[in-house]
Length: 253
Image (tube, rainbow, N blue to C red; front, top):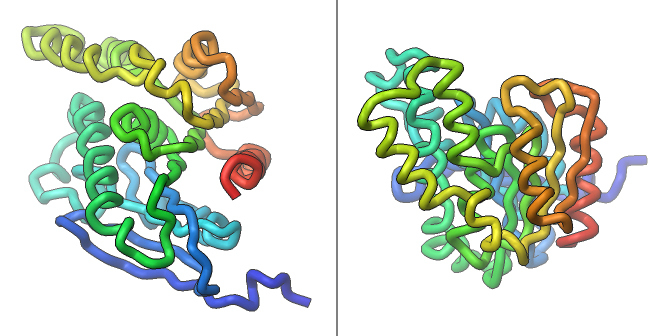
């Protein structure tokens, strides 16, 4: 016998709002639902990288909105496609900030007016670069209440410095200006803005792409956050996903 959620109608819709391509997932049961954004990782897109999580989150009871990050997916111009990933990585913080501001605007401009969406607050689910988008958005919008971050980093400056050293763009006048600007907006530096949020961080102990040290630093200054380690690299494991869903059920639903 099929579970109840398989007997209900799953609605998956494609939209473009203010030039931002997005996919929404919802169970059509007439209930008002908390909205949760899904933010994908670097070089990914809203559809290939969600990997079934949209349906799972909708079945849990969320109104799910997956959006293409700035300069990603359907938002990537032809000229950007010709750049190497290393070259594009120089702009990762700008990508994060732009995407977060898009999500904040879309919620207040469009989603609050949808009858099936809770209007008072919303929630975030981010993977890798998407986790940083979630952390930054949480510092600029008090309506964000819950953050799930997998293979995460809450750091602008230290994370960017680490990648700049690795890829060799850690020098020059513009680099110094970037660091100063990132410092002023760094979620880890301004962790007090995250204090009233419910936060789950799932880290891979063998992750060399987004090192767990950045999540550790947030845990040091905000000991109330949930930080769980998994025996994996820069991937989401089944156990990590199940723990993230359980966290959301306990904190939101």
